[in-house]
Structures are given as C-alpha cells and as structure tokens.
Amino acid sequence: MPPKTSFDWANVRKRRFGVWRYRELLPISDNVEPVTMCEGGTPLIKLNRAVDGHVYVKFEGANPTGSFKDRGMTVGVTIAKHIGVKGVVVASTGNTAASAAAYAARAGLACVVVLPRGGVAKGKLAQSLLHGARIVEVDGVFDDALEEVFTEVVINGKKDLYPLNSYNPWRLEGQKTIAFEIVDELSEVPDAIVVPVGNAGNISAIWKGFKELYNYGLISKLPRMIGVQAEGAAPLVATWNRKSETLLEIEKPYTIASAIRIGKPVNWLKALNAVKESNGTFIAVSDNEILNSVKDLAQYEGIGVEPASAASLAGYRKAIDLGILNRDDSVVLIATGHALKDPDTISKIF
Ligand SMILES: Cc1ncc(COP(=O)(O)O)c(C=O)c1O
Ligand SMILES: N[C@@H](CCOP(=O)(O)O)C(=O)O
Image (cartoon, rainbow, N blue to C red; front, side, top):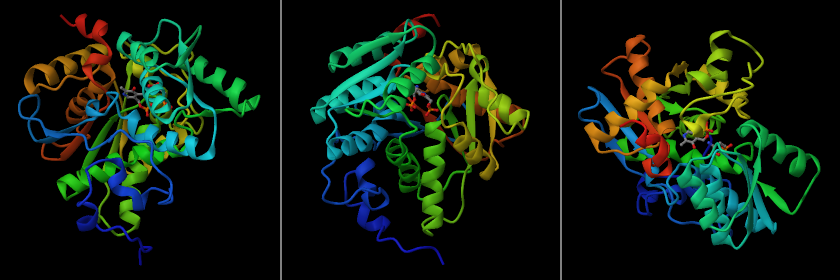
C-alpha cells in the first residue's frame, strides 16, 4: 500500500498552474508565505517539424527570469526569508545567479553571486546587475566559483549568507515540480525525459518528482531519465560509461554552452542513481550538434532556447541513432533556458 497523501489531481487543478499548485507535495507548512513570481506552469509544446514522433519540449525559458532555476529559487528563497537570514549566496554560470538575484530582491534579502570571470553570458550577467546582486568574479570555471562558496561560506561559516546552489535540498524540492507539471498536463507518464546536465541538480530533482508520484500511487509507471552533457564537459558520461564508483572529474571543462561548462557536478551521485534506477543513460553531444539543435528548435518550431537547453534535442537525436530510444516513444525534452540569455553565442550560428 502506498503512503497516504491529501494530494488529489482534481482538487489541485483548481489552482493556478505552477510550482505552488503542488503545495501538498512540497515540505513547507501552510503558514509559510511563499516568495513567488508565479514561476512554473511553463508550456509543454509538441514538436511538429524538427523531429517525428511524440516529442514535447517543456519550455522552461518561460519562467520569470527565463530558466528553470526559478522553480528552485521560489522555494529556496522562501526558506531563506523564513529562517531570517540577511542574504543568499550562489556560485553560477549565470542562470542561478539571475534567479537568486531576482528572488532575493523580491524577498528584501541581499544577494552575492560568485561567477567564473569571462564565463557568463551577457544576458545573465545583466540580470544579476539589474536585480542588485553583489558580483564576485573568480579566475577559473564554475567549479572554482563553487569551491569559493564552499570554503568561504560553508566551511568558514559565514552564517549571514544562505547558500542556494542545488546541493541545498530546498532547490530540488522546487525543481521536482517539472515532473508534476508534465504528468498534470499529459495525464500520463512519458517513456523518457531528456535533460541537459551541468551541476546535475535538475535531473535529480525531476526524478525525485516522478518517484514521489509513483510512491504515492499517483502514477503507475516511471520514465527513463536521459542525461545529456556537452562532449568537452561530460564528467557524468565518462563516469557512467566506465562504470566508475567515483566521479571522473574534468579539470578544464569546455563547451560553447556555458551554462553546462561544469567539470565537478555537485549532485553527481544523485544523478547517477536517477539514471541507473530509471534504466536511462548519459549521452555526450558535440557543440556543433548543440548549435544545430538551437537552430532547428528556432527555425522549425519557433522555440528560442539558449545553447545548453538545446542539448536535450541533440541528445534525443543521438539516442534515436544509437537505438536507446525508439521513434514511437513519448519523450519530453527539457529546454532549460531562454534564447535571450546568450545572444553572443547564438549570433555565432549565423
Ligand atoms: C540553461 C541551463 N541548462 C542546463 C543546466 C544544467 O542544470 P543542472 O545544473 O541542474 O544539471 C543549467 C545549469 O546548470 C542551465 O543554466
Ligand atoms: N548552470 C548553473 C550552475 C549552477 O547550478 P545549481 O543548480 O547548482 O545552482 C547556473 O546557472 O549557475
């Protein structure tokens, strides 16, 4: 017998479509007021021309700051405000920073963003500035920025700044609602979910969401989780392919998709478990395949995404070629961020 929950699809569907529709499945008591901007409730768009078959894009670029990070931030910043911290801190390739800055502003909290110098797309940097974050730049890549947050804030215990990268479990609680929305809208579970992977929080969170629905008896099957990384920044693909029990880190990750230019994903073990338990896999795609997918989503479907987001379409195509997925499988591709985030890279396509 599955455990009991007061959650009921018919009831929750009376509420606005978005993260807080699923409040019964978020571990936050009713008396806590959310810091929200109506995040989530993003479009699930069936692809007509870029690929054949039953393939949908979950367009997370439609969130308030233009990426899926807002789902995690609404919950994380709600908790930060509730526990009474002065501010929040994140390391970021740009989207986490933009989202943290916006939600902190809304909550009246300070925000410090630690960024890899020269490694953040223009649109994202502008968002952090716009929302009043304090920007600290470090030499190196995202992993060095996260190390800085770990040593300065977590290890040295600067208690007035609350860390909000995706090792913070509240972030994943918000992001798991992607799974709830997919089931809510399709009224069934797709055969596979294809997710671009960087720090590996999102794939872990989405799997957590599906498993919760399953464990509560609200769905009767689980999807396969397919994680996609860029060839030059694919520590999880290497770890998976070589069946390593420790993470095979990449010291100098590089890909044109700066959002997933990450060599030491903090959620690597959760992500490996998600893929293993779901009978999924990790796939590497080239920068060219990513850029072609950006163009195809834009020009065949009208969907404008930043490069990292298009890794899901590139990964889907590769999964079909390799026989990992069939053309008649129903598949949801997570398109993680909006095209306007990274105009410079996109203009290089043409
Ligand atoms: C646009 C975009 N796509 C994908 C990812 C990867 O998500 P995750 O770090 O949760 O694996 C990120 C951030 O890391 C991102 O900003
Ligand atoms: N691409 C991410 C990297 C950090 O991810 P997080 O989910 O751990 O915050 C970003 O936008 O910074």
